[in-house]
Image (cartoon, rainbow, N blue to C red):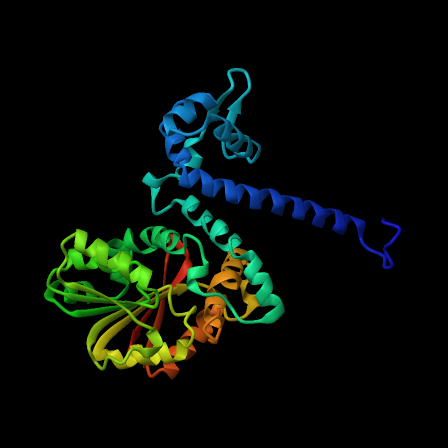
Amino acid sequence: MCNSCTVNIDQTKADAFASQMITILNHGALGLMTSIGYRTRLFDTMAELPSSTSDEIAAAAKLNERYVREWLGAMVTGKIVHYDPKDKKYTLPAEHAVWLTRKNTPNNIAVTSQWLHVMGYVEDRIVECFHNGGGLKYEEYNRFHEVMADESRQTVVIPLFEHLLPLAPGVREQLEKGIDVLDVGCGSGKALIKLAGEFPNSRFTGYDFSPDAVQNGQKEAGRLGLKNILFKAKNAAQIDDQKAFDLVFTLDSVHDQADPARVLKNIFNALRTDGTYFCQDIAGSSFVEKNMDHPVGPFIYTISCTHCMSVSLGQNGAGLGAMWGRELACDMMRRAGFGRVEVKNLDHDFINNYYIVKK
């Protein structure tokens, strides 16, 4: 025990916690290196190679060998990549590749590791907010829309037809016949563009607070020649549509709004009487003590503190945060006027709740 300690401590517990902290440091570092492995396509490259030297891996990936070799050092000591010192060759086990490569989307966890860079980029500004309050603007985040689009492709776009739409009975048939659809907080519009291409008889509108995100959506829709889709830069709290849509989506976008209560009321007003509101949002409880066994609880709270809550507070908003939780979400939807709120989950998705909401 250190001489400066003034209270008795359980040294076994103290040593166990020190070991936990060292694990955190190692895992945090591996998270960053996993993001680099995704962005440089090193995982994709290694998954297609036999056991190879660092020179061979670098050549196949068209990357600098010295950087690749140091990255491999992290991967080997982190037990992600196997190394044979006899022939100095590295192997990405197939059992690991299924969680790290693009061809295994939507099971590619490496995609999500990119958030560590996005959030770390604003650490200094977040520390300022701890002292002074307030929050950040969307444009202060580096690569946010790029990473969000990557994440959206994996969690929404790819499972959209097979898993998500079936959660709302009858919606697919309505889309085939032709209805009016709104996506609030659409980002770059990946999901909406996918829907517009699949259902040419329906009409699609996307609203997002960010002009950059809207511009990305417009460019992609134009490239694909879609004529049944419209994007607008619009604050969700200022939506004034009245009974204009048969189906409204919010895909992971309510909790970071400045005025989520107003947004939900606006969605209620914009939805036709027999319409459906489909809300995807973070799975969790409004009570921290009920999130102790959440498989990515610390990760979600961290993303919330450094982005979701902060961008809301940056607009003098409510600052709900990503873990606003099922209890508060259902209550706010009912207070917005909705009469029926059904919460569904998917076996493969432990991160999201799916709220199927009717008037």
